[in-house]
Image (tube, rainbow, N blue to C red; front, side):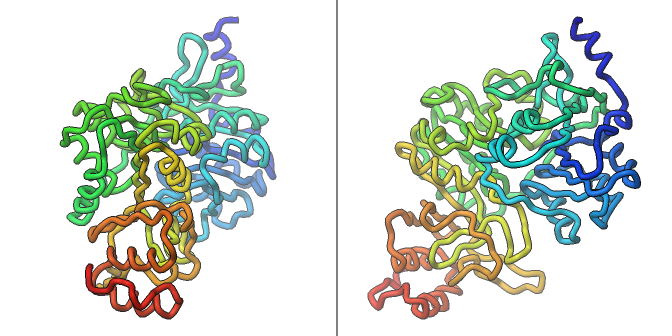
Length: 449
């Protein structure tokens, strides 16, 4: 049988495909820009027939899932997520979304060794002449999920780019149970994060630390975006890319001639990533582009893989830091915001890299809705805050007031360094608190900030 005939045999409506879901099943929706849409809608219509269906996704960027709209009681559908988007966070605030804690690099092993999957349904690019559907922008842990699932349903979207591997970036039609032709929606475009004056100051501090041949990992947000723009405008040469998230800044850097990958040892000349989110410019760039390579997250985020390249520079955001240098990047007290993601992975991998540096960046303060100025550097983390990067893994911390390297530093040295990059308004108070918790010496510097 040729692939076209096989395609016709497996092609069904979304309503027909979701009939495989039974009460009590675990259903995976895929991740990021590749999550099920028409299949989600079809499954929601079956609400009254089903009980206790557990649904997992990763960073929903396509609006509220229909299964959540259909059932706010969790009697029929329970929705959970490996890493929150802004929309997931709002659902969590309403009790409509649960968080699955992860170490991102380990998620493929969670699927292969720890958890159950009954059905996976997710978007793919159209089948190629060899019978393969490409995962597009969501390599991550898709293959591992498929290997565990009893049923595999693909939702074809003609707008999904075909992203070359790498490895584990596609599935053959022979491994697919049902094919659903979706409505071909445009992929969700992330709004460009505004770059504040503070972001610009922090970005300038970081870019000053880059060298020709550095291998770059950027997180999401205004500050990493500012770093990317500064790099594009710089005279840096032969930069490499090894990252978890592929964002527009890399396209800017590549098109400006800053990125060649010529100095990389692992995946030389390739820009390596495990998922992509950004603008249509990014989606067009990665489509069938041999300059990029999509890999599963247990490849991109393994610290020993990261460290195979020299001069790895990891640049990520955080929410708050305490005087012991514990970093919270995923919650505001008990309110969950995002997730651990790969921050821990890249802090380790960049430090292990020859000449590597891991930067965790944050504005020194934020302003509440009532106009109160609050320090992000605190004596202790806000009660309930999650430690994303332990004090033992932290390398550089950066605010608009400076940059400090904490590797090998004692508790009193860390307190002194952190207070030196705090907002001046809060430094005396932080010193008093450091004295109370016995991490301040009388000889600590107070006047040289």
